[in-house]
Length: 115
Image (cartoon, rainbow, N blue to C red; front, side, top):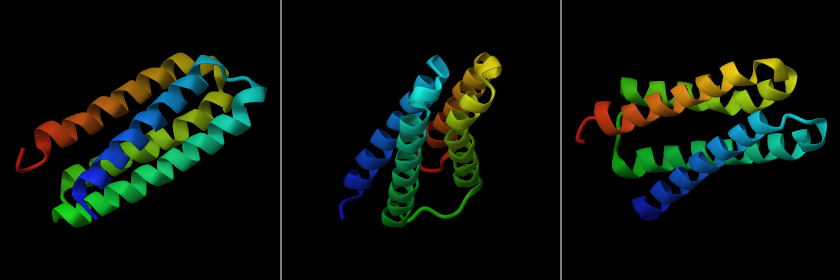
């Protein structure tokens, strides 16, 4: 497949994952828990598969920036569930989510070789 397909799929799924995470932060109610966690899991899986496909198609090596991005992905994937377990710490979790997104963007647009 075309690398652009993987790139668009990866970007859309990551944007969707961030939106679902902040949706969980906005209203961590028991009624929205099941749907938010299911949606964040699906978006997380699609982001991982599309990111792996993009790496394979573009011929990227397993450099440090890739591992940092995977760490950011893992952290962001778990934050929606943490919002339901500790609703009193949503403000700190939202700042952590923001920091993980900024770090992931820096890895792609500043640190990655060839940019």
